[in-house]
Length: 314
Image (tube, rainbow, N blue to C red; front, side, top):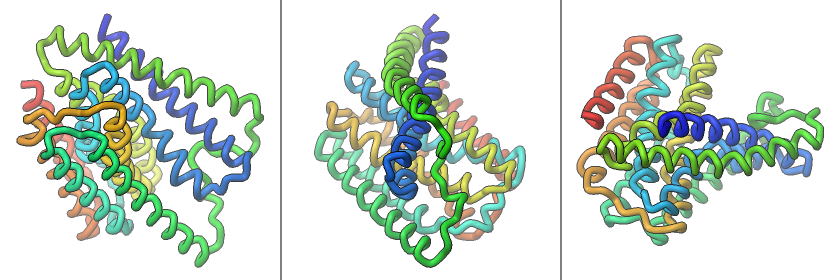
């Protein structure tokens, strides 16, 4: 039953997160907030809402290993699995993308996160540092986008995800209510039952966070990346993964650290954080040498993720 309820919680989380994004985006645009601001803030926060709610709920229910495992596991899955599986289906032409700046920010965010982890706990001090770094990244992205739009004509494709100019007010309200009610409900179901599964199988909440919860919360990114690969939008696929990983590290643990301290399991310091960093560094091959992520690379990335899961569960 715990598996069924965990799956139900995950489905509710994903659907509620999508509803919240649609409702918030269209309400913001209706209120006259520029699409640029909506894309940089509401969409970014909304698409990561499931991970954020899980981490906050895990801290509140005194299973902080689940919170940290979710973020570290999601970042590893985002690179090895979320880029690996779509590349098996269709070559991603990342040679056409220029993502060096955002990739560099992601690596710096990863190193900052690992450095703070060696303090032994993510407390409010760590949270403040991570959120300050997030503010810097968002400000830089805002300036870059402004420069781009000043130099170019407005692109109709720049509308934020979920935007619908014809959406009636009542539908916006329904999306907002579904999102705001569904997110905490789904998070509560998933955290409670993932903890039960961990106890039944004799594994730690950290391992459950790194596997079951991390893979589950990476499903939206996987769906987005598969569609981007099939549509030959490699920049969307790569940008989605890099942006998601940065946000996971800086925002989710940054906010959750203010809810309560998150102790760092020694296993993270000796293994999982370094796997996350190694996976992140693999992207340098595609970012700096402008190689495509072809089927062979897709198989390599997916097999590497399978090996990581085998080590964790073994």
